Length: 107
Image (cartoon, rainbow, N blue to C red; front, side):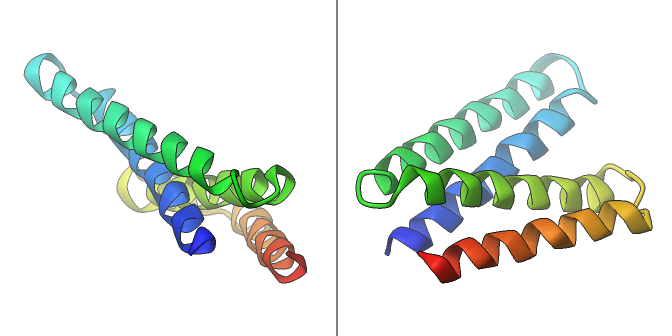
């Protein structure tokens, strides 16, 4: 169950970065709506991470959480914000994924 919650926490991190990216493109009420989403995803992500670290080593949980967030945010940037998908960028994201899988395997 902790691994499931950790993945959800990482996906919430991706959610808050997506909201932040959208908020920078708008003004007025739309900005407030995206920032509300940002705050909601941030609270959910941090709360789930705190819950997971009660029974999982922080040295495993935190890198996995940030890794999911980093990989997801890069993919969101490529898909939704037209950021470049260069060979080296994808190569290093792949190495990050392999490292996350390695941490889960060893835990």
